[in-house]
Length: 419
Image: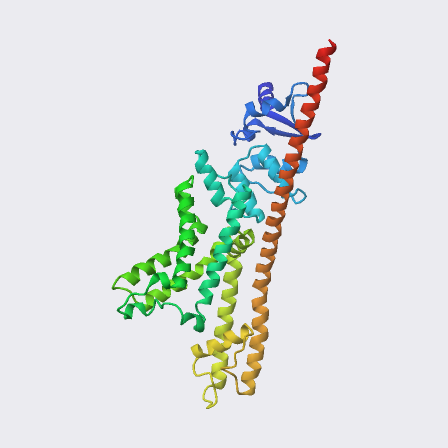
């Protein structure tokens, strides 16, 4: 019996967190040997032999959640009274790992776009070029280059919109009619083509520079933002190949022109707010599915009722249930083009009920989506401000430490002379 008690006592670990005593077992902590508490060698520097306990001057509430992480074999939940910024510091201090931090941030509604530490090239020159073109927040030159890239994107979008104006379109060489003409247009005299060539040249240079300086080529090709960049560049070169070949067609060239609209998504690389919108759509997939499902049910029910109410009437606009779908969609979404209208009193009453019921039904998932967006937006924007404040605080603290170190050196020199 005494041997059993000694084993239990030897296996017990006492942890003092800012005056609050926690007791657990070594076998519990050993479930995660790479962490601070799970590794005896790492936590030995916090051991107090006089009291036979480990002392940590950390947040008590956060430590309860961290201890439960060991007890539950990997379940981590942030206490409501602990801010995310403090809980993140506790996770990093106890070395739970980047994967755990990424999971808890994802559960809390923070973006996972830049959660992992930045992977940088080993070569110094390659690293400078990579930071210059891919990370605008690293230097003033990188910020200026990002502003220039955004300006080029905006001008390219404006040019692609302006060339659709009939009065402007007549003054440029028409690629769509090039397949039917025997003479080649003079590209040097085509201002619109030269502008398009200049825009795509810059986009191509930017993409290739980031590709060759990227520290991880596999993650570069699989990145959503890089795929958008490639899709925005490719139509220009494909259209050149088609115009020079016999297989060119008006439909193919028009499709390639339509694809150029993807240029506007390049702005999401330089705007975290746009990234939050895309992430919010992804996270609210269930709510959007519910929205589509409600719309589907409402359209089928109201279209069927309206058709059978006015079936057989000479003045009816509802000639079939599928044809009535268009009226139901207009009514539910409160657009109301007026190309299809009910004529009988009962059909008008049904249309009014359709509009009211549709507006209420569609509003519920939309409110959930808006709530998710507000949560994601303010959390991530607040985190950005907190990160900037922490960086400024750390810089100020480092400057203060350097001043204190310099002030300590002066008396030591004087003491040397007084000796």
